[in-house]
Amino acid sequence: MSVRADRNKSLWLPRVVVGTIVLGWGGAAMLQSQPPDKPAEAPKSSYDQIAPALVGQQSFADMMAKDKADKPAVMERQKKLLDERYDLTPHERDVKMTRGKAVLMGPTCRLPEGMTWDKLAEMSPDEIKDKGLFPKGFLPLPHPKHDAGGMLFPQFEIKLLNRLERFDVDYDIPEAFLPEFPPAMFLTTRPDLGDVSQGKVLAQDNYFEILNGILNAKDLEGVRLLVSQFPQQQFNATADRKTEKADGMRGVTCFDCHVNGHTSKATHLVGDIRPQSHRRRINTPSLRGVNIQRLFGSQRALKSIEDFTEFEQRAAYFDGDQVSAAAKGINPLERGSQVHFMSEFQDLLAFPPAPGLGIDGKLNPRKFKDDSPEMRGQKLFFGKAQCATCHPAPYYTDNSMHDLQAERFFKTQTINGLVATAQGPIKTFPLRGIKESPPYLHDGRLLTLEDAVEFFNIILETKLTAEEKKDLVAFLLQL
Image 1 (cartoon, rainbow, N blue to C red):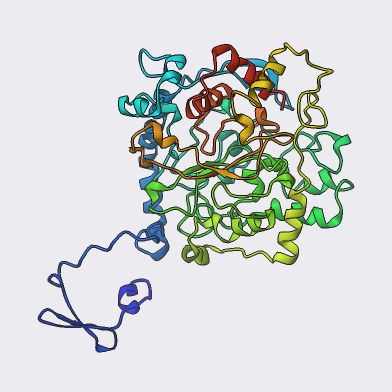
Image 2 (cartoon, rainbow, N blue to C red):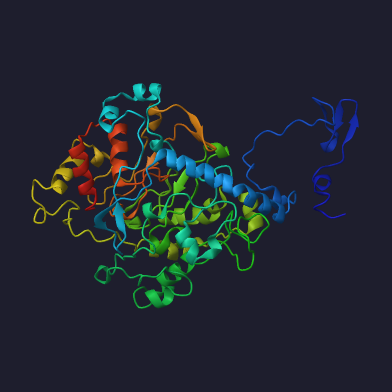
């Protein structure tokens, strides 16, 4: 008899049932609450995400067939949600990202019927909540397949790296609203070189030719590790994976999500929250400028990039589930060399140039008139709009965490499997280079800078005028 076929028997000691008494471990007795043929339902557990396929209760072929059959309905439901929330017609502006992609204009968020942004901003949080008027696009955004979650990559990245394709779900946010791909890469040590990526996606087969002569040997080894595949919860060689082919599937790389040290806005669910319905979507943030950051992880507040690099491999890659990680091939990196080398290179990743800023991180007065939209926007940023409370110059982060208490404006509700409720404190992300990192907020619910300005105008109750909001965006585009 195989171990798998007799798994349940092999895991437990024999039991002798006598009336309503069960004799089990060491002969200890306990009252049985119901007949033996009707076992009590197991309570929900922190281990409920361990897939049945991993423990032999479902074949990979059966799981894949079911996931493929379910996929059209899953994506149609998410498309309906996005269409209900946003006007997804892309409106380009003259401002470009480093490699030429247009920065889109908004707001895209749809308002309740008969409502305007000015009317909404005049209402109190209680009034908005009681009347159900908080824009749906400002509510937490669920993962396209929230009950499963897991790393999910944009289609433009999958076209280049087909090993990242899942058979059960596709990415949801349209490409026009995402960062340019591949993104530029800047180094704090060689600002004279500008973008050092050569227009390529850094990978194992090209990282050396791109960066040799620019980095020292230790940092090159760090890059090699950052572009090496390691097993991950959905991308691995076991029968519990979401990729169709096992051949060559060794996992994902750090730079699959943080492409060229920036981001493709690959998404997943925060690993440390249970149950599944309360886990939050997190879109991959940029690694640009991590050398000036002192907090890592959206809510964990890890204190160094070394801590975060190690945490990613030991915990985040496997949704905080060390049980299935052991079966899938967890990769505990050696702290003194491997983690150190990876972290040292990450600390060399620079923000993109901002020619409009002076050495203090604020607008250079020689380049902007006092009455220009940018200067007026800067005054608002450091004044009425209250942005600088959390985002002070020169890097526009306070390296702290803040609770926006957005739940003041809406009632707890379930959205495509996500329970939208109080979310607690979130770290302050830097705003330098913000125009190259759409969509915004930790889960990507704000598709454009205009959406972000309207969101915070309501959340902070600042009552900005339409002209003031335009000026504020003009300033943000200079960061």
